[in-house]
Image (cartoon, rainbow, N blue to C red; front, side):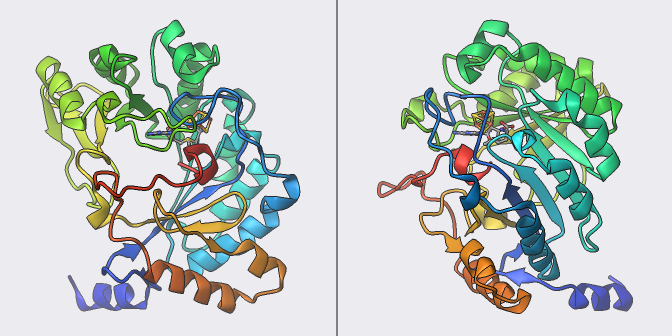
Length: 341
Ligand code: SAM
Ligand code: SF4
């Protein structure tokens, strides 16, 4: 590294935890509401949504985002709940994309409402989109999400490509006996549609509390099955802090396969992520059982410096890793839809 680059690196503000990990990624949940009821995420009856007054207002999200960015956050992902249910999502995107220091602005969505938003989001400066798609079969899609939405999810992927919200990524949560018969079909899909299909292990973050270890399809199994059909090669230059191990097709076909294996092969050692919930709590791990308030402090008039101190102190206490595989594992009290995946 040249001297000049070393200097620039030293000048970058850096949020660091007690384990030496540098935090550069922030996921912001902008609503706890959702129009789907994915069985692995929330109960069929839904959860009790928070009152609007409890959620951060758009300008509050922005104020906190400014503080996070001043501390060294470079990549922001908007999520939920379903982010496209939140009024003001386009305006928020436009403001965030203009923050100096934000190098990457992404959104995770179930895609159902993307038709009405894709052009405006692209115009507002969104860089990338991830669309959840757990099945290519109408009935299985319905079984998993409890919504007849396969056509709209596919349309959303088309829109992501059309508006260059790329590389378009597809998240597929694998559940044993439900959609694990589709691994090869998803590999075909990745190639035919030129998208990155990311197989995600089912995590114990479901609303109904029905998660069982036997329901998890290990990432290495998904990898082996794709590899048997189409030889894979690791994508060059991956960052260890990425959640997915990424592979390209060795025959040069378009598309990509990602393996996200938080249960069987935890990647906590390289984690660079923190989360802001829709009601303004900072979570230092998906599986945190403690949260740090930022909303009430902001509403009580805390200055950016005071908020920065709170964030820095919380990050210092970031958990070494999740404890899914430990006998004393305690699942978080909130479901994935409330935490912001
Ligand atoms: N509603 C949006 C969506 O579904 O894309 C964004 C929020 S959702 C909580 C974010 C991601 O978390 C989705 O890709 C979803 O599949 C994933 N997810 C939710 N519950 C999960 C679980 N129990 N295990 C693994 N992934 C989960
Ligand atoms: Fe909603 Fe996303 Fe959870 Fe499905 S995974 S219920 S779309 S928040």
